Length: 359
Image (cartoon, rainbow, N blue to C red; front, side, top):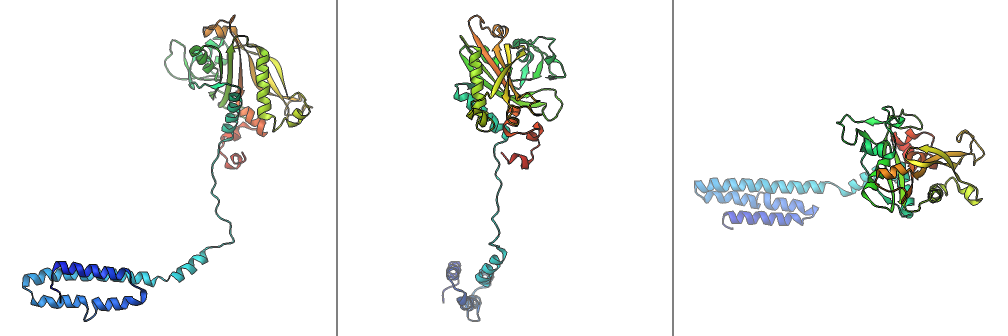
């Protein structure tokens, strides 16, 4: 019989664990008898205590007790594992599974319809060689109005239209939330020399009442081309290409196939362009015959545009006798409403998943 030492106790424990690890269910009872039976290994250890001194009896007695409890715990854990019938588990899992039901579909988000339209607009003009320029939404009054040839008494500066921030005035006027992305045109012309060919997408703010066609904040894409010998015909060509690229495959297909007029330009007025025009698109509802959507004109207003006013060029230190240019402003929400035939702009901002997932 091995001597009662800490080393032998540890060796006995390792042997038990090794035997328990690879044991089968039908062998568990034999292993239990071998270690915990009347003639088992644990019983033999207790018997050896009688030949030891009182001090050693106390020391090794405690060690044997701890060893016995630990081995018994491991053995009981193994019994529990064996008592869990795998066949019963499989049958239970199969009862929970209804194979005839469809699997769970996880909804994945996608790009917002306004962002989709904005990306498409940017892509069209990038194909024409326009760069993208970005500007701040908190703007100087000088850039938002004055340098764009908008005089101090112009209605656009009225508190009913413009959101002024409660901040100290600067040498360039008050601080405002930009009412259009045109200030980025000013910043671009001040920082770059012609030729300039860029678009300026972004969010703008106005003091408008919320209704089906107005928001206090919305999105614009403005465009600018400044160079020598830029003509009005260049502007019309670029915008006609834009209309056919955005709407051609969706709502103007019939008109394009028959070579009918799909857009037109009307004379208008903007302080920062001269001459100023508005571009209309053929009504996709009545195909140009006249209806309530187009107010019986056969066309729907799309965007404003024109040749850059000579005073604007002077304000950014460009000689109007040398350089000319054109500019245009596109409302992203308006394009999205026309493209998807939506009659209420507020739908884009309600976050109704039933609406958004259609795009």
